[in-house]
Image (cartoon, rainbow, N blue to C red; front, side, top):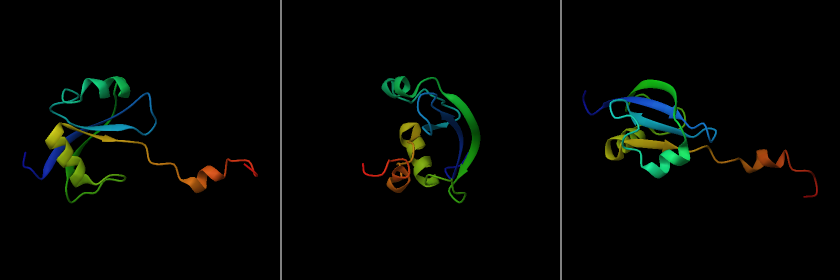
Length: 95
């Protein structure tokens, strides 16, 4: 497969909502450091997809994901930051 494409396996963490690992399908979890594996928990398969630079992903830059997978064997997507305005909706008045 050429450098502009990558078969990627996406797995999610059972321990933290919206935490995902993007992995090279051929290598799987092998390149992921043990400390991250322990924090991440047993991976739950979400999907397999063909990454291409010209096809964007929803929350992350596909070019950065592909570079990270090629350089370190994985890309860690953390949960999005909490929106302070949304948090205010659940804070009682006067606090």
